[in-house]
Amino acid sequence: MRNKTQIATAALSAALSLSVQADLSGTFKTIALDGNLDDWSNPADVLYDGAEIGVGTPANSTYEVVYLANDVSYLYIGLDTAGTGGGSISNTWTRNIYLDMDMDAGTGFNAGWMGHGYDHLVQYGASGTSYSVYEFIGATQADWSWNFLGLVSYAYSNDVAEIAVPLSNLGAVAGDPFVMELNVSGSNVTTETWAHSDEASAETYFSAVFSSDYPAIVVDGSLGEWNNPGDVLYNDSEILDGSPTNSSYENVYVANDASKLYLGLDTKGAGGGSITNTWTRNVYLDTDLDGGTGFNGGWMGHGYDRLIQYGAGGGAYSVYEFTGATQTNWTWNFLGEITYSYSNDVVEMSVPLTSLGLAPGDSVVVELNVSGTGVSTETWASEFESGAKTYVLLDNGTLVPIGTIALAGPVSGGQAMVLSWNSDAGQSYTVEYKNSLPTDPAWLAYTNIVSPASGGIAVTTTVSQAATFYRVVSP
Picture (tube, rainbow, N blue to C red):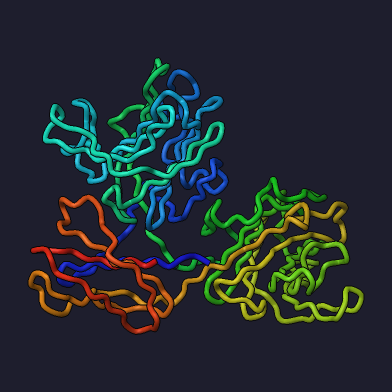
């Protein structure tokens, strides 16, 4: 289940609306700092690939790929270094990450020749002594310094470094754009690597805000609206190829909205999508996540409560429920037909969530099999049924908009003032503040609170400045 995020601000009473621009749009997600790239999406999270990066010497000071993502609190940076040991924090060189957060080339560090003005710097490496974030201060390029703001979280392996930088240290919120450039320097680096290799062409990252919108899948026999790889539950390497080839899958896509589960089957070979083939495409669903209930064939690792069938010469495009006390005394109870469409090599299906006993936010194990006349080797996904994957249904939710922040009470120094806004029961909120929007680098936390009931929530603060700006963030 995905988190639901909202931001509202007030300076007396105002609301902030955030949007994500086009171009290099970011992905809103939380990255596990574990020194591997499993939770990065290639190419969706790639800011710089190898073709854009100036090759440095030694080889392991150079990057193969640079990844970016963010959530409401952190900017995540994934560095896929070249050569052996490039990810280590103990290398003698320093990995410099320059950030133009205000998108103003006239402010920040430019060394007298750069095309951008970098107001923040993240450093990683330097024999383990540099894993920090800094802010540029100073009037000119000849009169400046880097002001230490805090340490960054990181993890590394042989050739991977992952870094999490608090957005608050960067004076940013999710939705802000910025320019990012990388450089590696220090002892033993005879040729410095740069990404983008031509600094004037350094690329812009448009950080993402959470969107709880459901995908708009059109069941039309094409995969144009599926998000590859975001909607891929099984890819080619995870699927056991069957015979004939067009009974097998290249990719299996899964998505949902408030009322339907959508399946996209990208078949191999010509004619694989046709409803008239003699074989049957079986989709097994463990909807209660209980291996002890449902169909298991006497050998499966899961218990499948629902079965979706498509094909069999046009006679099977239905959803069934497992009924029976044991594996030797059972039947598939017909629940209804499904909506489908096909083309030469694509099958799309939509199944009502009510027929599956599922709702947004639930989880379901999905396994696929192709069988029937003419199938000499059955295809399975996952290839090993015990490794069948779980799909978590997207939950759009019904989060109450925060709206504007109402201010009530005296506004003279040292006296109490009440902030109030719309709230959901059980939802967490953080009140943050700044005394100056243009000069204060970060929003500071005033208090965290969980709403006891829906409708409204209030926090009392004390006025101590000539001007104070507030915002509420959830979660």
